[in-house]
Image (tube, rainbow, N blue to C red; front, side, top):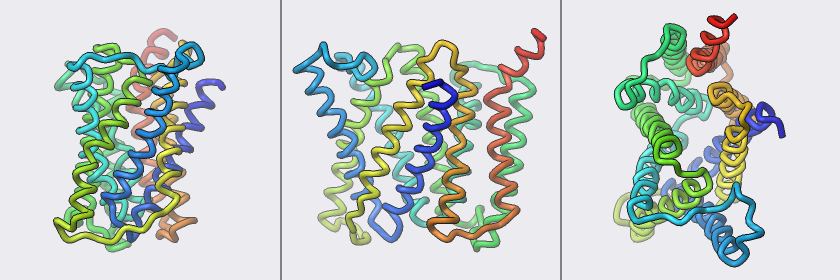
Length: 308
């Protein structure tokens, strides 16, 4: 599959993942959903690791999980902890807000990753990247104004802030991914496998606490969307990393195309969950995506222009 096609299909499945998440947590207890979804993911990777141990010659290289030192296990466990914080905040936000609001908020994570790169990696954005950041922020404000028509006031609604916190942890996770995969040299399968296992372990105490009614909580209802959201995310991540393995693939373009998940979630939220349709919200969502595309493609566009 061509890397551009793989990126677009990955975006579609990421949008499906968000819609399945909305269905799974809608009027449902969040913590059991998180735990069971990660148990499914961890179970799939554990099965693949056992198959690899029994038949190493039959396991495709892309799915091969490398042995790790205790220090390396700790590094991946830290990633799982960051993602766990992100998912707890995000899942609760998705439960209480329209997915057509939460998805664009989450889509701004690459913009905030740039600010992290400024501080941690010492990177300096180009003027075109800063234009993209500015467009994204303006569109974000426009999205907040559009949300007021649905009674969602961004500055007063705690679930909006939960979504923002989840997005910021997601941006931190992306920055840490650059460190693990770029500087440390982990391969994607190893990170994904142990990351899934540690996530399930992190959510286990929360699931036990929920089961023992240690706090006020909602009842849990099993839904097959819990399995579907896990499978959709696994497929999306597989296609995403597979696209990046292509030597001709541009990481900035792959990342930009993957943000198309916002359109899938936006349209799906309207068609499947009856969320409010509003032209201002559509313009705000398009603005968010345009800003992200300009931000991520800025360096590549400037290079093409300077060499042209």
